Length: 89
Image 1 (cartoon, rainbow, N blue to C red):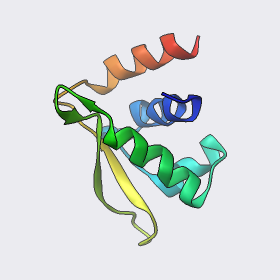
Image 2: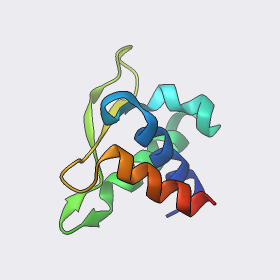
Image 3: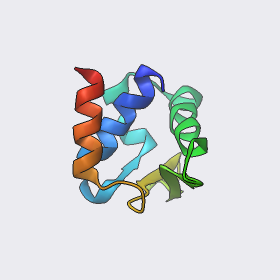
Image 4: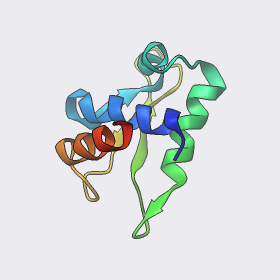
């Protein structure tokens, strides 16, 4: 995973309900538009035991971009945050 993908997972792990809007995360990651969408879509294509770590969860509230949800069948937010912190250390 790239540094941006790990940082995106950190934002997701810290979010309410394991859901983030791509547009909301742009300031935290310093990415915009297609670059930001590419980070989340790349994560969604990575499979663990045949399941995606994150899944698209509909359009953003303003109609721009997508919302992304952590697939808690694989990992919960607390465990993901612990893993991400270890990777970023």
